[in-house]
Length: 110
Length: 326
Image 1 (cartoon, one colour):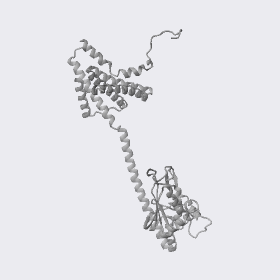
Image 2 (cartoon, rainbow over the protein chains, first blue to last red):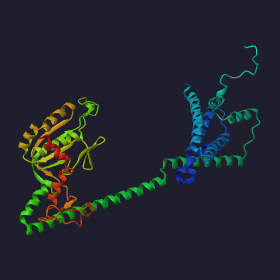
Image 3 (cartoon, rainbow over the protein chains, first blue to last red):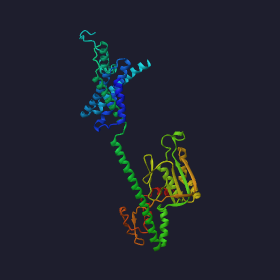
Image 4 (cartoon, each protein chain N blue to C red):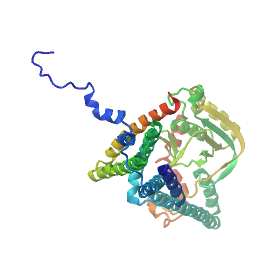
């Protein structure tokens, strides 16, 4: 419950304050958002499975975002940034899809 | 099993796909299951106030971060916007400048014509009258009068009345034949989509577009010719151009010929002076003037006439073709 309240507070704060993102962080935003989505879907699925845990949710959220951005950053430094982005998107995309399918089974029993 | 095969550990059939299987079959963070197991076993650490506060802070930060990222991604990059605004301002500025120059050009043209007229009418009224007539023929001045209007429209393959192979498009060739036919039928001035034709005007195609001089035109092509409408119509019909127009219909091109009581044809403005000579001087030694020296050139009264007669055999292919077909 704390995690959900905190997230909602954060979303509201982000919408109200609208802080500007530093220019050199801009390239990693898309990947970070996808990673955040993956964590969100994972958390929702865990909740429906009845094994939701706030600490696991928040740490997986944080590590997802950081690791995804780091991988892409590393790829940028090595000159394979776009391929790394593709790799991360593919892996996270598959996870999101199968989590979404699991959520769907929970919700619609189909 | 072959006799010499080394019995090894049994391998999964899809072992080469471990990576994909790992991703696909365990999309959920294993941490959730472990935490649930710990809770079930009663060994989960107890939630402290500090732990809860840390979670709350982390959650707020993550939520704010994700929202900020999403908002920032939806906004176009400021650099792009800046560049765009800069370009827009520049375009507006240059367009205004071009408009100014065009107006200045028109005013100067009018002044030149005025001064020429003044000079010629006092010095040599006969030459002035000649100049006026030539100005019409050269397409320099706007003219008004009765005439013919011919509209050629590309056939539309979509409605099934025209073939879909591009033959329903009006070609530069069609316009050339029509314009030549009009000249031959006695037209005194001709425009295509408002572009006044002079003796040096070229009608040609660049890709799918028809260029009149360097202006790209598109269907429908309105060709207006000033002259005696009735006689032009009959003469045009008797020329090969008339037959060509009639044959266009079978390709799906729409051809409409109508007599107009009053047509207003725009002038081309001042022509670039390419050759000039002082009237009455020896014709054996024409003084060639480079086009770039136009301003300094002697804008003698004989200028336009010389231009007309000289250039017609250089670049007046459009008109010459028509005369040849006669």
